[in-house]
Structures are given as structure tokens and as C-alpha cells.
Image (cartoon, rainbow, N blue to C red; front, side):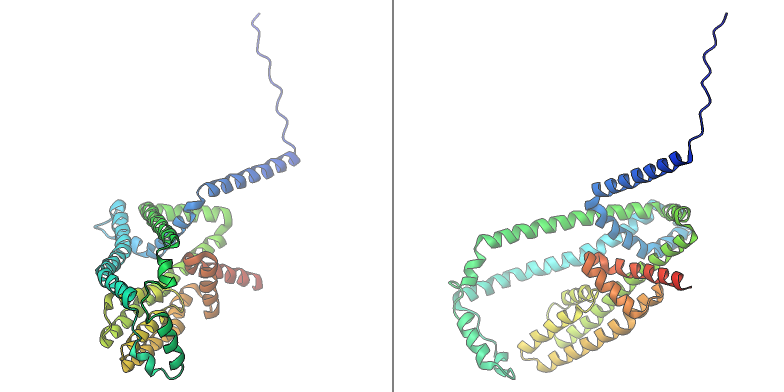
Length: 360
């Protein structure tokens, strides 16, 4: 007789309570794995976030380039060109600034040596101050007009504290270069993925959160894009206008000053520091009229840009009121640093959408 293998009894259906426990256990496992993965790549989250902000801002340009008949299908070429453009926009101004600083290093060293031997002569502008002339003159004569070689400040410059600060600055600079390099690599990968990445992301959001989630994601992307336009474009505009004012008033190193002003103008309420210091330098050189004119012109430019142009650019794209735009930018910067300038308005957009859904 041929023996037949024993037939396994049919599996009993899993009770509903067991299914619920299995789903809950699977959810806990997925969350734990996601948190573990985020912890592993925690040092690169900011890198990916910066790359995401830049990619969102340039996404319309990427789509326009991909739709061109001469560039259709050449995703690697488009990604390379856009990534190199971003790298040059950062590297070239920084390189120009470093080169300018190196050219001025010789004169600064001579001035420093003269200050050590002879002190710093009191500028004539102090005698023209409206008040406090005697107090400022006495302090200057006691602390700066004498040879600085034996002063406590100069002794501190040769201490180990300066060496420690120098090493710390070098380490931070090296870390910044590394972060920037990884950001460019991440940005290239995002650009190369192109529409495939966008389609997969929207598909996953629709599957997980429905059409409302997809619309919310689209509005957050619009908020980031509008914030980039409002901060970067307006900052560059302020830098150009104030650069013209620097040239007219006769300030040295106009290009470098305009670049620093443009960078400062991208941060809320920081532009007055740059043109204010420039006006103060003109005032110290005896150019009172030029200093006053620069201060007035800069104040008008910053007032118009901060209160009219920038809120319109950001608010129209995000459909946010001005106060929420301001809270999002300042609160985001305080919480997340520079990256928060772009994350804050996006989070305010989520808040407005949730509030609208609640009251409707």
C-alpha cells in the first residue's frame, strides 16, 4: 500500500482581537523603525531639508527645462546644470569676499602694528558729537590713544583663548563646507529624480492622507516657494539699491558691501545694521551729508521692502495674513535657525488650513 502524507488540518481564522493586536504591533514596529532610521541619519536631516527647500523653490524652473524639446529626457544634464548654478551662486561671492579680505590683510596688519606701538588716534568726529564729548574723549585717551602693546586686550590676543577660538572657527568652517557639499549631492539626486519623485510623493500622500493631504502638501510647497521669493528676491533687490547708494556716497569696496547687504536683507530687520554701519563710517570721515542721505535712503528702501513688497510676495503665494507671515518667519528662525525662515510660513499654512477646515 502507498502511504499518503497526513493532511494538515485547515487553519482556523484569526480572531478579530488577534488581528487588532497584530496591526497595533505592526504599527509600533513601523514607528520604531522609522524613528531608528531618523536617528541614524539625524546629522543629515538639515542637509536634506535645505536641499528640499532649494528644490521646491526651483521646481517650476526644473519642470520648464524638462518640457523643453531640446532638453527632453536629459534629466542628468538638467540636474547637473541646476546644481552647478546653485554652487556658483554661493561659492563665487564667498570667494570674492575672501579674496578681498586677503588683499586688505596687509593694510590691516600694518594698522594693527601701528596701534600696538602708537595707539589709535582719536577721530575728529568725536569733537563734533552733540553730547558726551568729554566723557568719550577721556575714555579714548585712557584706553585707545596710548600704545596698546602692554594693554590687557592685546595680551588677551596672544593667549590660548584666541587659539581655541581659531580652532573652533576652523572646525565650524570645515563642517559648513562638508554640509554644503552633501547638500549639493542631495540636491542633484532630487533634481535627477525629477517628476518621478514628485509623482511618487504625491501618490504616497494621497494613499495615506487622501486628497486633502495632497492639497495641504501642495500649499506647503507653495508657502516655501513664496518665502524663498520673498526673502531672497527682495534681499537681492535691497542689496542692488543700497549698492548704488554706496557707490554714489563714495564708500570703498562697493561690491562687497552690496553683497553683505543683500545677505543681511534676506533676514528680517537685519539690513539696517549694514547700511547703518556704512553711514556711521561716512560720518566718522566727516561726510555728514552723505551719511544722513544714506541712512534716510536705506530706511526708505527697507521700510518699503519689509512692509509692502515682501509680505505681498509671501502672503499671496501662501494666502496668509501679514501677521502670520511675520510670526512664521521670526518664530521659525528662532526655533530652527536659518532653515526656519522657510519652514515657519509652511507651518503657518498648515495651521490656517486646519482652522479653515474646523470652522467650515
